[in-house]
Image (cartoon, rainbow, N blue to C red):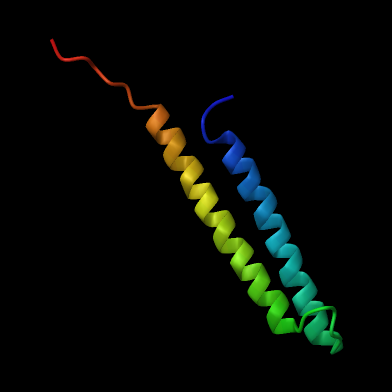
Length: 75
């Protein structure tokens, strides 16, 4: 497995959960229900998950990029 692939997968799953939190927040706001959190809480949680997923994705991309650098020995 190449470097960064596991982090990219984790980032994609995290972004899916963030989208799901945003949908719950939207539904809670439209229907005026309090599902464990207020609509603002669901949106804030989704935004936080989205940022975490973005940071993990960037970290995976940097790791993948560093693994592709070929070091030429000096003679």
